[in-house]
Image (tube, rainbow, N blue to C red; front, side, top):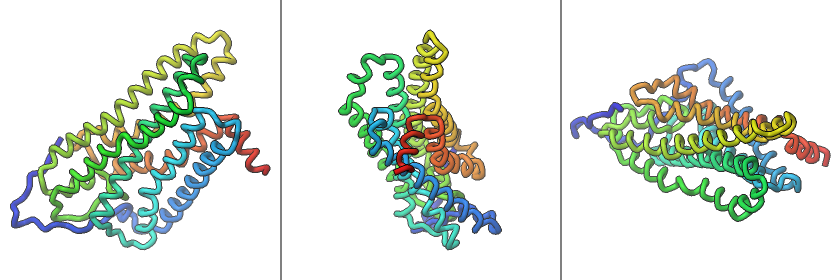
Length: 313
C-alpha cells in the first residue's frame, strides 16, 4: 500500500470541486458513448423494473427466492442510478465538474449499494442452500419474517461503515490536480488526489472490502459447496438438472459481480491502473446490472411464464 506524504502547508490550496474526466481521452466517441450508455440505462431500468413488477404481482412468484430477486432488481436500479445519469450528463454537456459534496454523496451511495449487493447475493445463496439441503424445513426456516429481516439487514448493515469511510476520505486535504481519471467518484481515483497521509484510509478500504466483499463471497462458496454435494447425491438426472437450474443463474451473477469487484478493491494500490479500473468498474456498475435480468429471466421458466402473462394482459 503506497501512501502520500502531506506537502508543506504553504503549497496547499483546498479544492472545492473535481473534474470527472470519464472518457475525455476519446473525444471523437463522446456522442456514440452517450447514445450507447443511454440505451443501456433504459434497458436496465425497464428490465429490472419489469422483474420487480412481476415478482410483486404474479401469485406464482410469491416465494422467498422471488422476494429476494425483487429486492435485487430494485437494488440494481438504485445502483446504476448513482453513476450512469452523471456519466450521461458529462458526455452530453462536456461539463465534467462535480462539487466536493456531490462527489462524496456519489461515492457514499455507490459504496452502500455495492455493499448491499454483496450481502444480498449471500442471502440469496443461503436461501438456495436451505431450499435444497433442508427442503422439509424450508417453509419454517425461510418464513416471511425471516426474509424481511435478512433483506432489511442487507440494505442497512453497511450504512454506518460506508458513511464513516466516505467522511474519513473527504476529511483529507485535496490540493494540486482536481482531475479524477474515472467516470464516477470511486475510492482509489479520489485518494490519488489527496495530499495528506492516506495510509489509514487505504487500510480502511481493504478492511471494508474484506468485510463486505470477501466474507459474503466465502459464505456463498461454502453454501454452494454444500448444495453441489447434495445435488450430486440425487438419484435421477432429471432431479439433478432441476436443482442445478434453480442455482445456476444466481451462481453466474455471483461470479461476474464478485470477480470484477474483488479484483478492483483488493488489489494492492500500486497495481491500480486508470484504464483497468475503468473497465472493471464499467463491468460491475453497468454491464452486470444489464445482464442480470437476462440471466434470471431466460434461465427461469417461472419468470418467463409470468412475463407472458404480463404481456398478454
